[in-house]
Image (tube, rainbow, N blue to C red; front, side, top):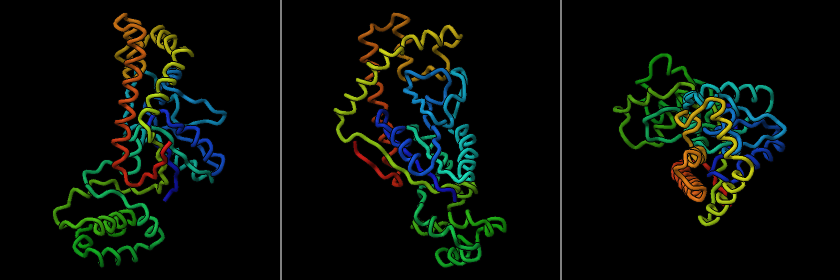
Length: 287
């Protein structure tokens, strides 16, 4: 399996800064998984950091294009593999947990989360050894495998993983075959950044919003309109852009624009944490 480092967390927690530090330490290259920063021309409001070294999956689609988690997985997977083949460490950084979830865990209705420690222990086993382990922990599960699956180490590892963590009768678990065969391709070390103090979260977001307004957020939206984009484009249906568009359309005062932008960012940060806390593979750092 390919080893990767993942920096995930709430908005305004310094994820990119940490990722850049780790890149120097581990000879790494950064891959973005922020759903707002994948868009071209959306720079100031999205807080796009432009370091000296390239960040993969920045600026890859225009604001009028849709981009899904499936698109992300399709593009990110070969980039990760290429970085690894060149002897470097893939470092993913972002706050769009859905992208990360689909990359690491696939699209699966099964309730058994991946056990990366177990996977690492099984990764060096031969197919024959994996077959014997699965027979030992769940002969029924082994007997239901077809010829292809019984010789597929990734499928065998996943079946062992499920058998060891699921106390239910696996006979009724045919849905597990929906898991992509290559879905245990990566072995991640996931670092999560979150605010321990909710007041600090609001304080940092407030300063960030004020700074982005000072550095040209309104002008950025005006420029996008001049380029032919409008408020209904996918890239502009996001926090910051929606508030400024309402301001330009005289639906918001400047004070209301700032207030609503800050409130929406705080709400978004709270939702991010709610989703991420369900992932037991994340090692959290409070800031």
